[in-house]
Amino acid sequence: PRPIILTRHGQSQDNVRERVGGDSVLSEAGEVYSKKLAKFLEKRLKSEKTASIWTSTLQRSILTANPIVGFPKIQWRALDEINTGVCDGMTYEEIKRNMPEESILREKDKLRYRYLRGESYLDIIQRLEPVIIELERQQAPVVVMSHQAVLRALYAYFADKPLKEIPFLEVPLHTIIEIQMGVSGVEEKRYKL
Ligand code: F6P
Image (cartoon, rainbow, N blue to C red; front, side, top):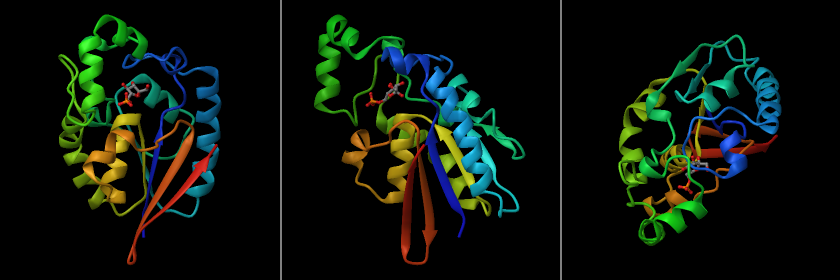
């Protein structure tokens, strides 16, 4: 059975400053992760004839894939992080301070809350549909290098998690989630690098 390997990008400069959205490059720790990840994948995929690397169109995702050589890379806009609309570039504190009503609405219903001029988790689930169809058609392993909210939704699909849990699933930085579809259901392994 072919594995699907999910990982967030290496830590970005916006992660360090705790800002949502943006299109920043990697921090030093993020760069270290991108190199460790390349080594891990080289070993993990050595026995596979083919594999492909899917990234989002954001710099932090593309840069994380940079040190990986020998596999085709495909950029998907559908793998871009949740669009935080007018909140793009703000910290959670700043959102709370400047738009307290929005903060409260999101806390009340994180799954359905749509950022002003941006997206909700439900929007993400919808835009992931073509990605999921393509993933299911693949015969070879796929490495998906994406972002927290998007990977929560993608992981939930394969791990069969209920909709209401999606915005709260644990998808930490610098962690590889390997999913295997076997006859007896889905198997999961996590590696912290
Ligand atoms: O903080 C990193 C990040 O990927 C942000 O860009 C994004 O807005 C956020 O995580 C999504 O997580 P949550 O829905 O918990 O705010």
